[in-house]
Picture (cartoon, rainbow, N blue to C red):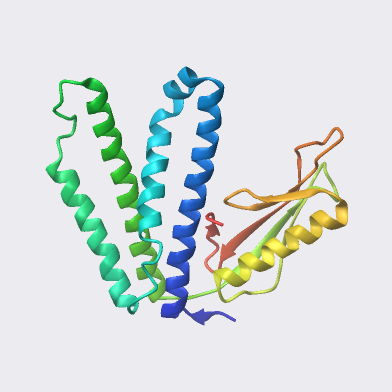
Length: 225
């Protein structure tokens, strides 16, 4: 049975999204650091800008990680909107290309602007989600894609259980994935937009045996686990 979204659930959703961005930024930084150690010129050519953006996201969202800990939901919303306005003001007041005679400094300036635009968009997504959540009753369901039972055809199972909160469905989904992996002697991991159990040896090494996805009661897939 679905429930009206409470202010506490809205705060939990914000906390979860911020934690997810921080985790993904840390993972990206670790990946790019390894690439730089192996071949710095190749890393710089392809991913220096991505590394810069990941560091900006990590710094910003680590700084606002406790935004929901004090004040009611209206105050939290005002803080998010204030961050958005501050970033928009900085973008308006900044030169689009930089004004230094050093082109590397100008490049860094442009990367900073791009990073701020990405952060602004994330914050606006929060505000949009909060508005949507305030006007609906929401629940979640689990879909399992089984490639182990019949590898040629596969099969999709929509579980009948309805979960009232994201935390509930994510915990249940991960428990199901872990159980599936344990039963079949394989490994599992969070892929970001879905959970996956996969083979670690033999001719199917690296192949997915099962994926688990989460959908809300409007049929929209949740892609930020």
